[in-house]
Image (cartoon, rainbow, N blue to C red; front, side):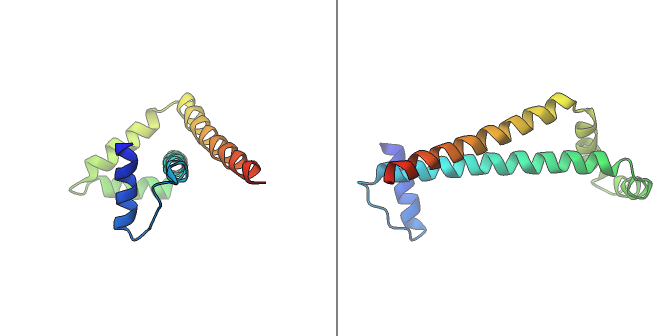
Length: 118
């Protein structure tokens, strides 16, 4: 209950008025937000992974990467690229699994709420 009041106060600080009697709606909104953030993170991670894999096959991009790695903070870029190069196929399937699980839970909960109102 204390966490819910904290969420309601946070929403009020953004100018969103919520009745405290609508606790279920607030909790649902928080769950939708959490699922959406997880979906966004998994999609961004997959996009980075595939862009690095495809980028390393292109010779023009490889030459640009070598130039960037010689800069002051090029070691950070090198560590990120090496991390994604060492990742295996299981990593991709894990991220895709997280994506589909979160999407399905979001759609399922929305369906349950919609059918409850009809």
